[in-house]
Image (cartoon, rainbow, N blue to C red; front, side, top):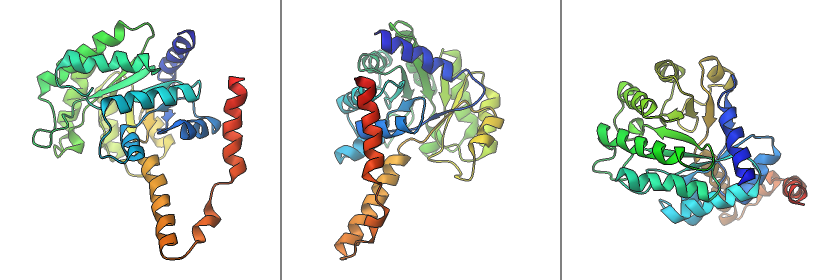
Length: 276
C-alpha cells in the first residue's frame, strides 16, 4: 500500500504541472515495460487493447481488472484504469468498479457515460451525473488519493454536439471529478473550447484527433493530459496484419523491419534490475 500511495500521489501531481502528461496505453506486461523504458511517467490501460488481446469485440469486467493488475505489477509507474461504464447502469454498482480497480493496483480510473447499448448509447444527463457523483464518493473513501476521470462520450456515438459534451463535463466537474475527458475532439478549436469551459485538468485522446496536432500546441491551449486510447494496439495489429499478409503471399520483406531483440531485452532486463 505504501508503494501504491506514493504512485497515487505522484499521479495526482503530474496533472498539476504546466506541461501535459503523456499517458500511453499498454495492453500487457511487455508493452508496459517497453513504455517505461522509454521514459513515460505513467501508464493507462485500454479496454479496447484488452479486447484485441483476447480476440473479442469487448472485454468483460474481470478481463479489465485482471489486465489492470498485470500492468500495475509490471512497473512502478502510476496506472490509470479504463473502466468503460463500470459494467453497470446503476450508479452505486458502477462506482464499485472504482474500488475494485484500486484493489487491483490502479491509482487512477475513468468512468464514462456510454451505455454499451446501441439503441440508447448515452445515459440521460441526470443519470450520467449521478453515476459520476457515486464514483466520486467511492474514490474519496479509498486508502489512496485515486484520480477520477469522468468521460462524456456523445461525440463518439452520433451526438456530434460539442455544447452537450461541455455541459456534461461541467456537471461532472461540479460532481467532483478530478479530470475531464470528451473522446472525439478532433481540432484544436474544439479542444480549446473544452479547456476554457472547465476548471479541472482535461484529457485529450489523440487516437481520434488530427494527427498533425503537436504536444506543444496542446500545451499552449492548456491541455493537461494526452492519451492515445487503443491506437497503439491497433497500430501493432496493423503491422501484424501486414506481415501476415506478406507471409501468406509468400513474401518475407517484413522481417527487415522487426524490432531488435537486444532493444526488447534491454527494456525487460531494466525491469528485472528494479525488482532485484
